[in-house]
Amino acid sequence: MSRTAKAKGIIALAVGAAAVIAAGVPALADPAVTETHRAVPPTVTIDFTGTNSASGAANAIGAGFGGTATAKDATGAQVATVYDQCTKDAVSADSVTAFCTADLVFTGGDQVTFTAVVPIDNPLTAKYPKKFDGVITGGTGAYKGLTGAVHITNTATAVYELGWDA
Image 1: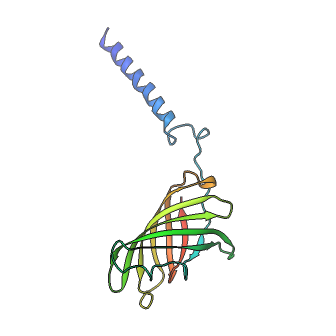
Image 2: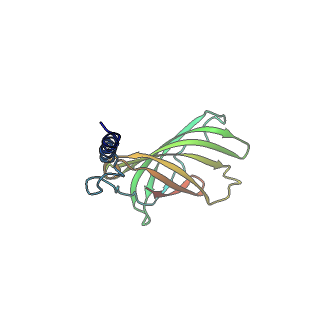
Image 3: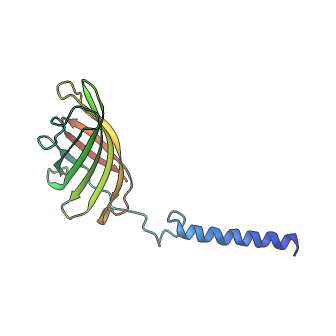
């Protein structure tokens, strides 16, 4: 076999392999065949005031706390219940840094989960608003396969506005 025939065979093999890989990777496959858009959750405000046990948790690294809150849309209607669980990772006289996971369960049953490193200041000296981001870890129903960032604005003690970059 000549070198030209070998080269053509290698090129044909490479093109065939690329086609198989492209078919298996959603970003490279035919967009009409893949699901490229997911529903984006609504912007919500959550208020853990009186429901989160942060103040009662031991003031030590590794101490945990959690709670539940309602999530309301811009009209004030409840659209979800939020469940969170946090672990203190840094403790100082004026603040705590916690690693938190949260699950928003929407009234229709769909869910969105995310994690965030949350700065929590002493309520007597805190300055608002504080902005930070979290990572969307998944979803169910209309939010199945959701990824991206959640943009969190801490507007008052234990009150957070969530926006989505999904």
